[in-house]
Length: 240
Ligand code: ZN
Image (cartoon, rainbow, N blue to C red):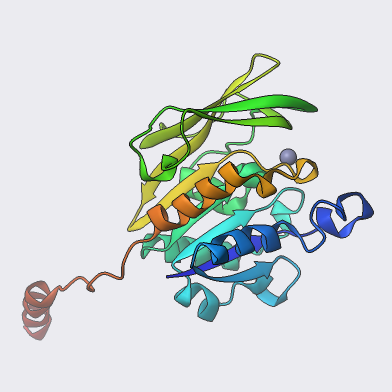
């Protein structure tokens, strides 16, 4: 299976994140997935067609998506292209502030961006509320992140098909932080942690979730649907 990690890649080009993500968050995520035996490419916003040409998407089985400040710069035709691939079976793993991306909003059918947030470095505990789920494999009871951005409900999303993690923050907020959907033939996982300034993607448990999510979101190529009988009926009708 082939994974593409897409990143907006704007924050990390400033000086403040040089020590945490010198080559961008996508590089850290891609390395973790490669170390797990997956074939991985990367793409960023400022490449032509945001690095998501039809050719790249056609070979991509699972796409990871990190975006924050430049959601509106993502071209609508590229969003449509990603959407069509999800319908056809490509997996999508949406990370952190990707909840407000065009592609996530289109797939959810909500604006999904009215949640509460504070950037105060609270502790986050992601409770594993679905220990039998493939995405929770190897995680145990919980993931503790000493410092993260806080998100709080209400997260305006359709009721998830499955919930894997629920987060608690020291401010008392809670958040559905690991959730699964199916759209068309494609599987979608949203995973909340990953604010750019906290180095979260270096955390081994977070990396384990990403590895698990890549494999969970993979749908093997399926036979094209055969409309042979129906098409022949239509042909006959048209012939008359
Ligand atoms: Zn953030």
